[in-house]
Image (cartoon, rainbow, N blue to C red; front, side):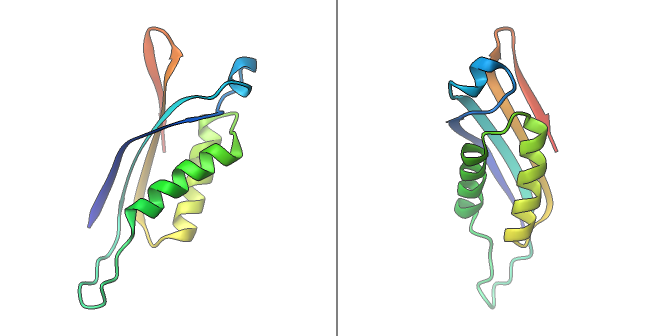
Length: 105
């Protein structure tokens, strides 16, 4: 099975610039992962828990770099859930006037 979590949007402290360390900004996270579904045992990954873990981790840690957030999320999610082929993209849509900035792992 492949699961997509698309446009998970919330406010968080993330960034190096002085104003980013004080004022929360919009963060958008997109993630996808695979897992082995076992119908006989009703074994599945609760995607709402994965989404909540992403949101909770970014809000709690107040990362300076998106790259740090991605690496930390990658490790946490693999440790907490039986995932395969995890991909995560974090977007800061309001940091530059002319564009959206994203980093993907």
